Amino acid sequence: MLTISRELRDQIVAHARRDHPDEACGVLAGPAGRDRPERFIAMTNAERSPTFYRFDSAEQFRVWRDMEDHDEEPVVIYHSHTATEAYPSRTDISYASEPGAHYVLVSTRDTDTTEFRSYRIVDGTVTEEPVTVAE
Amino acid sequence: MSIEVRIPTILRTYTDGAKQVSGTGSTLGELFTDLELRHGGLRDRLVDEGELRRFVNVYLNDEDVRFLAGLNTPVKDGDTVTVLPAVAGGAS
Image (tube, each protein chain N blue to C red):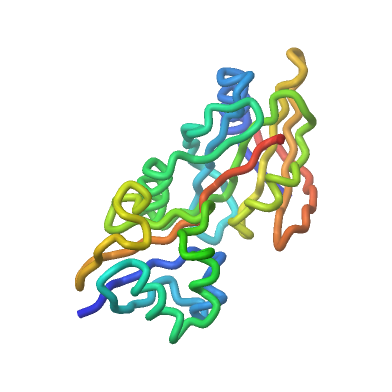
């Protein structure tokens, strides 16, 4: 299960809406081993594409080093799908490389409602999990 | 002296869980060949047909080696090499 504050969830959704129709991506960092996202980090989609995302490598290096310096880890890795449902694609599954992370997908295909779903992706297996929004 | 290599979580199965290992070599490619002697299987996750794998980022100190000379990038004692899996995906 993913427990996330309303503020962090709203920041992800706002980022996804802002970058639509390109895919948006980023990280929520949290204290290592606590499974609690605390810090919102919007990342640059180096691909600037409506169908693909990739973190900018130099930015990823800085962000990952910064997390390590603060004894944090990437608790959530999020990205948006802008024309399809918020479910991991075959591409998402094949590149998933953080077995400890919650993979959050947001879909902005509908202008009025935003799908917000979370998954574990381990060794090519996708498991959806409930999302609890804490006030 | 040697070169320190920082290993991401997903590749620590090849290093008995170690976050950091060390090796020697005059280029990045040689360093990976040296690591393979003690951490069998690791090189294959980093290198494919003589090139750096597309979805692995390797940094020499704080520079992405793709913007240096890839596997031919010179390395020396005291350098730090960081391996990070690229974070990528998308609807297509």
